[in-house]
Length: 246
Image 1 (tube, helix red, strand yellow):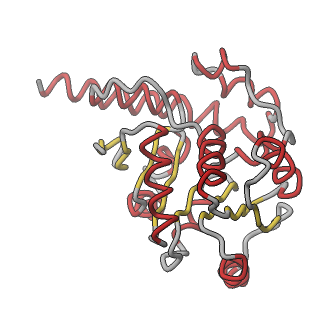
Image 2 (cartoon, rainbow, N blue to C red):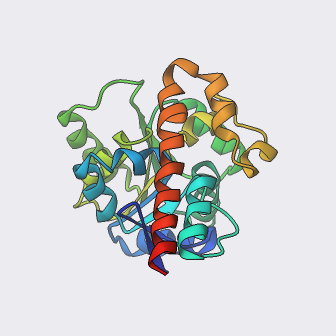
């Protein structure tokens, strides 16, 4: 699968089937694999946070979760990507694949019980374990507990749903886990029903950010009103530089 640099981060050009196939193979063969669909926010943070940029570039597949990231890839690299790899949708596709192949998944994040119940309704034969962090700050001791639980439950796929950059930092601290680690951001909240998702039409035209901002203005205003426009400016600057060089 092709990789393109976007603001110094290597983004993989792929579709859902390619990624779920990679996850399936890694789960069946006990191979370490890191997959991170990302929006524009962590890409902007990574411009000053070089450690975060290093973390993102250490992952096997960083994917365009946001329409803006997809559009930026198409604008700068002519990738002709028709769809993004949206965290909540990817999670559901992983669950469908895991149910068919009898691969136990392990959920690490918040709202575990609600999420597990919701997934069980959609995928009755899916084997699920997990840890509900109950919105606590991550401590070093949590890593040992997580690794222990993964071994005890014989989990084959680890799915982290804690948002950026926390979930990326956690995955980076688990280099010896012999299974796919997939970071899906707010997917846990959406699929559990704890938070509502933007309508499909708003997602398709890049207005999901507005829906989420209206839902949580105090928490998300900086991400969408500062980092969002800054991302667009950075991409346009890159485009102008490319054009001038030509």
